[in-house]
Image (cartoon, rainbow, N blue to C red; front, side, top):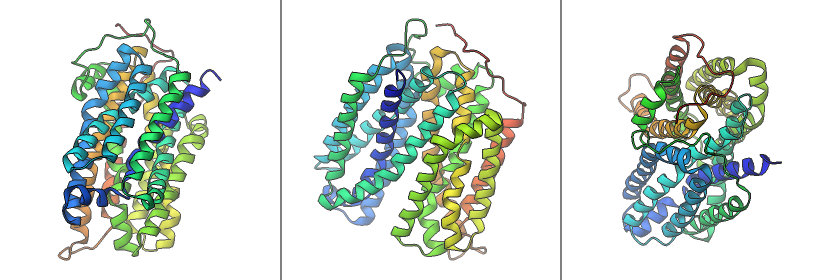
Length: 410
């Protein structure tokens, strides 16, 4: 019970983080048109700017919030971020200009970087053997938010373009109140680490943690895997329309099926896979399974088969938590926030790069002038990235992790 309520708070926080993005998607085009007075095409352009600014701030600020939590504690960083998030959604709901929206998404990107602190909190309250499975619960929380966000946002859109933002603000505020009463601090003087600006940026965090055994290699693999896996949100809607002629309803059903399967795999099934295969075996299994799934999706021609393959593809989504478990066990307790901040930055950078790469490949493979029409070409690129992941993972053999939790110098 001592861990259950704090863990519940962390999972709700991460669900709200994921929901906050999908919740506003159904109304964002109309809201941008309202505040800018432009056309739908111009709204799409501004939508890209808003999304990129959000991801860039996550990339830049993930290590900073993680390092701040190593110094001042997880509790104040998490609660303050929720307060800022709640106020930020309220400001966006009241926005009357595109510049207020842009400022809101920039601030929101900073506040959403708290996922690094939330994941570090999970590491703090977990034994080495529990870490990978609980990191899977972190991924499951994002899967749940991924499903609920667009669904609730679409329902709330019936009450106006501002309604989803009011809901997101209220959810963050309610979770803030919940956390205030039940969340204990896990950073004690024994593991507290002084804040350093050298570590509070992605490059500095990588150099600091890179001195520890195998971490740089695993971070690189984590980044490549994220770029490959983001092929789903990057091109799925375009791929499904080009290959199967699906309408938005069918696309939504397929994405919901994937999100539900992802939550089941990372929240429940992964603990059994880890028990059978171990962290290293789980990584290898995930890479092989995902590679097969990407090849199948690249060439599938039946919409029915694709709808079956979509949730099955989530069965390979065990690589990220297994990698997080390996890295978390290889570093000192007082560097957990820094590690999770670095991984937040790596994920945010992948979110910036992957859509650019995947949509360009999709365009090249479906343009009128292409000699070989293949809407599934981005999945082949993702498969090649997984081959690169395997090469990075296996190059130097088994990564060394600590059998017991190591204490590092302050």
